[in-house]
Each structure stands twice: as C-alpha cells, then as structure tokens.
Length: 484
Image (cartoon, rainbow, N blue to C red; front, top):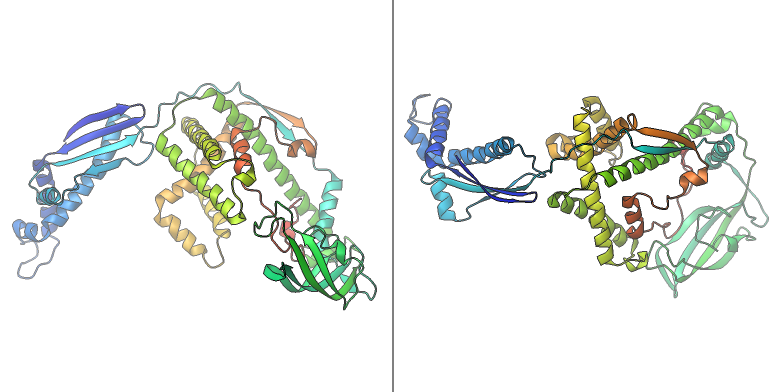
C-alpha cells in the first residue's frame, strides 16, 4: 500500500492511497478459499467447488467487499500511524468512471483513493486549579414556599354558583367567538370555557370587561392583541369577542389541609410543602449551576485560543441556525422583529458555534486526562429520561433507534460527559459561595456568557397562545415547584 500526503494546510489533510492490484487479488483469493467450504452449489460436493467457478459467480461482489474492508481498515490505520484524530469521519474519494470501477472489481487495476479530513488540533491542558468562580446561593424562604403551595392549591379550589354579578376572583363559564373585521379567526372560539376573572389567562382587557356580568348575559368584548403577540397574524389587531355567560361562581375558601393535598394525589399538606420546597431548590440550584458553569467556561474561553475544525463548526452552526429559524417561523416573526438582521444573526451564531466547538474540545481533553467516565447505568438513566419525553406508545421505538445508531448514542452521551467534566473541574478550582437575593440570582450578568448573550439577541420571544395561557385546573402535584 502506497500512502502519500497531498495536502497539509492548517487542520486540513488529504492522503492519497494506492493499493496494488496484486494485494487486492490476494485478499480476494483468501475470501474465495474461505467461501468454497461454505457455499452450496448444485453439481458440486461441499468443499469441492473450484475457486475459479466461485470467482466467476461471486468475484465482483467479493471484490466489492474487499474494497470496503480496505477503505475502512486503511482509514483507521492511517490515522493511527500518523498519530492524528480526525474531527469527523474522513471523506473518501474514488473514481467515478464506471469503466474504471469495473476494472477494479474485476481485479485488473490498482485501487486508488484519497482521504480528506480535518484533524483535532493538539491541546495542551494548562493548570486550571487557579481559576476562581463565585457560586451564588439563594436560600428559599418559607414565605416563598408557602406562596407556591397556595398557587398549586388553587388548582383544587372549589367554586359555588352565585346569582349576582361577577366580581374579580369569580369564575365564569362562557362561550365565545372572536372576530377580526367581522370574520371569525382560527383559535378564537370556545364553548364552556371556565375563566377566573383576574387570573390573566386571557389577553389584557378581556377579563376586565367581564367583571359585572351575570349568568345569561351576552356581551361584546373588544380587545387589541399586543404588538409582540406570539401569533403574527393577530399581533396588534383589534378583535371583538361575542361572549355568552353561562354561569358565574364564587370561590370557596381555600384551606391548606390534608384533604386538599389528597385531592392532588398526596398523603398530606406537609408532603406537598416538601415537594414544593424540593422543586424550588432544584430550580434555583440549576440557575446557580448555570452561572457557575458560565464563569468556568468564560475562564477557559480566555485561556484557550486555537483554530477549531471548520466542519465541526459548520455542523454546530447548522444545528443552531435550524433551531433559530424554525422558532422564528413557528412564531410568525422575523429578524427585524428581534431587532437584528439575518446577516448579523448569522455572524453572531457563527461565533457561538465556534466557541461551543472549541470549548467542547477543551473539555473533552480535560475529561480524557482526568479519566472521567460515563457508566452504563448513567447511560441507561439518561435513555429512560429521554424516553419518558417521547409520545405515548413510542418509547420502544426510541430505544430501538439508539440501539441501532451508535452515532446517535454518542451525541446523546456528549452533553452528559461535558457535565461530568464540569463537575470534576469544580472540585479542583476555587469556588466561593455567595449568598444572594432571588432578584440577584435571576438577574443577567452584564457581561454574561457570550453564548447566552448571542442567543438572547436573535432568539425568538415566546408568547402566550392566541386564546389563553395554560390553565392551572388540571395541574398535578408533580408540577408543584414550577415557580413563575
């Protein structure tokens, strides 16, 4: 096998490989000899089929297998011998001439092909024990826990029909049809819709105009959709809702009792408080971790400046860009609505992609040197966690997909590995806890992480659905800690 480097520029490499026809003939004969004891052909006893007869029947298909084996094996061996790591699977270029390809399969000419790839640059990991980060710690007060418990309990509040006018806090049951310029619009109609006045479930102004209505009343409610409304075809437009009031009910007193907790599927009100406290602490803990991780990544970003493989950056950028454009399309918005231009957004997201790839390579090298491992048990937990998010009845398809697609499993593993590397680094750097208020924890850093800043500039804003926000009526105890 003759190997010649034809390109060595930056991270780009191109290798020309020539495999003599004689070498391929030897591999083909070995495969034919192995096959003659296994194949069954009419007219021949087992193991007595002449090699030349086998060659006539299966020569081309066997030679195709030989070529595939050479391509696969040589790619691995060339990279290993050169001590290089390819950023992505090398691209293989062969002749596209059909006659030439036929000669190769017939064993008449040398096999020539080239490998094109980018290498992962050598990364010298520097001592990072001197990195200092501040961990903001928010101690959730009992008052906030109790407030959230009450919010959850609202889903179990009962109402009693009243004969008088509806007040703020009362629940009305209504039918309505929304119209713009006299024409009903999609998503603007409902029957037997229950609405607690003052809950801000509907767009601004809708609920206020129903204060004072009685059962049996019919009323035209005129509202204007906000300019930044999520559905672009409704944003900024005036709509008239023809509303029919079917029932008015006053709220009964809300008592935080064990009976209320049982209606939510829990054994006691104290258990509800425990769940709420745990979920609030978990939620704020995730915010804390993100800020600590941001500081750590910013420090690494300042330390490691090198050229990232362009194909990895391209792939990361395409993933980001696809997500951004899909979200813009779904929301009916464009880059002008986000106070930017497509050209500027592309530039910023390109920078984000480059940063992600570069820091990903650094973390991978740190993790390898620190012998950070992902156990089979951890991967199983991760798979089950993702499977839970799959549509009902499709969990098995999810597992089958990952069992048959090793690369997909690698992609699933990568974020978990990164988090474990960050965990490892946090045990070796200088981390100082700092008590903060809720406002301080929620506030964005002025300089912040470059990735977050870039995403916030161009990422579409998510708005409420055209008709209403998600109702709390069917909220379960598992969501108790979803603080607003």
